Length: 401
Image (tube, rainbow, N blue to C red; front, side, top):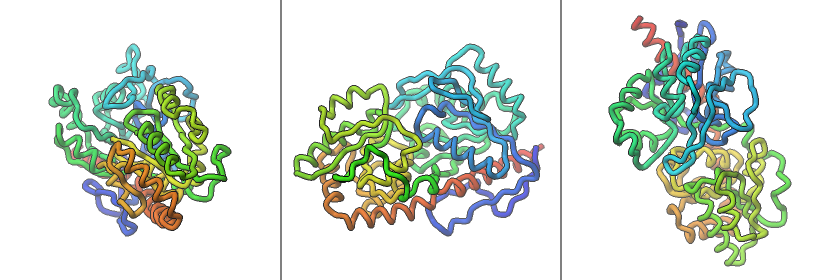
């Protein structure tokens, strides 16, 4: 086990908040750590967990650590260095959304072999109490395990029925991280843990205002942007109805929809062939351009643990209109960098869209403040905090040996 020296105090109870003066950990290791990130969600699946895993791995490697991502095979996945795939990813409906689980023969044996061959110092599981790979990793790891919880939910039948089972797995974690206060609220209904809040990060060198404009963004009318999976809780139907109300008030605008999913035909029908509603499918590299060259980012999501897309929009100086939900209140404030509206209220959403379309000064003010706030969530800061948690865990483990 590597011995650690550190420049600052432990981050065990640190709640990372967007304050410029926040003291961050700078961890020095006598040798690079071997880190395994275990997740059901990785590219080509798109979502907040994938982004979190990818960018943390990138930053940790910049610190000189070896980071492997352990996930499953899925259609469209390409071989990548330090990405280890076992089993097959299966899409399932859970928690009001499309989730993923890994299926296959001998998964436990395969994962045990991968973890043994990797000789890891830390195994970091994402969504630790979700089947299959994260829970297997908790049980099979021969080194300390850290877990990050990403999800807000109203209730869970599974957690109610299997509370003891899941609490035991949670107790095996050497550190329990949550991406937001709202995530801890959901989990505290069922479990007890000493939570450390470390939010998602944002790459402000990629998401910024000065990026090329995608061809699908028109110059003749303002663009309202939707970006997300075609998932009922992301509120695209609400936005389409609100956009039609905006058009009914004689405001010129285009709604650009970035995303995809099994429900695409449903949303195509909801758009009714409106020529000013443009579906462009899933994009990855061009996302900053869509944010930066839109007048408004609209996010009428009804359930979220953290507003990562809000941060992406803010980093591009694009003002936000979003639902007033717990997970978003951790990131934005009404009238500071966003206009917040009641969930599912098409009239309130239309009113806020019209207000921003009519008021360029307000758009600029919200956008500038958003860029400032987003810069406090850099991946460098987030990664340093997680590495500090590793230091605390490994230091306690070494002391116990």
